[in-house]
Length: 352
Image 1 (cartoon, rainbow, N blue to C red):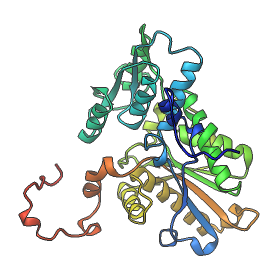
Image 2 (image 1 turned 60 degrees about the vertical axis):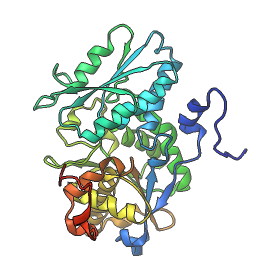
Image 3 (image 1 turned 135 degrees about the horizontal axis):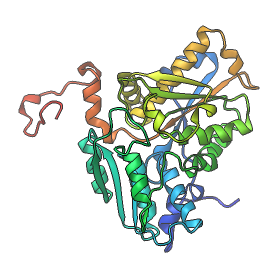
């Protein structure tokens, strides 16, 4: 087999670069023992770094697949405009992929509470945001919802709504690439897979493939608590907007608080696994799951043929887009002090 030296040349270089199937596997990195309280019980925990995708986030995988598959089916013919309901990684990933096929106008409905930093990111990547006041009780069939508006606008001539919340090419992307990589990287010895619940494409695609290889594999989904905030993942109420039947792909659901997600993300980053809050969120859910299994004396049921428990959790993106949020949700004691802070010339207002 020829060695992949990771060079993309010629007029199709960007399409090749965006295609996960033409790139080396995204890293799978075991977290250090000081972050794994189960290290002495023959439990290994690996971070799947989707930050090493072509666009630096997990949505680069389904974003490319949704557009590429529509192109392969001839569904981009006559399309000049794309509209999606997304406040971040999905729509900018779609935008980059769509430009491969000459589609330049990319618009997205975003919620009124979107952070200014996320708006700037969309503008940077050439996405036109349409701020939408979402209904108090979210429903994909509510004419006031961004999902409904995107679907309706996508029916107009020359427009397309990829529809990440019910487009089967979303989970199929992870079934085709991410899960195969994890299976290969763990030599088929993985016993627990964990991911946050957002559009649920990640967990469905990985669960589908991995359980087809090992029926006993346990899949842990992590959702936000009702009043808790973590970017990219959803509460039980918000998951009702999803068109996928994600529950049949998950064995157990855990909930993680905001501060725990941000703190674990920061701890991982300080150790060299530089990941964002939704990654800390997934790790927190996985650790809670293992703690519960240990309390109930059920850990041994998870062991593979080597007597080990091999866990993998998804790390969707990095911390940089959310840096200000760490200082909002964590305590001052979590950070070093600034010496001579009083002479700073460009100090922003706190919580600005």
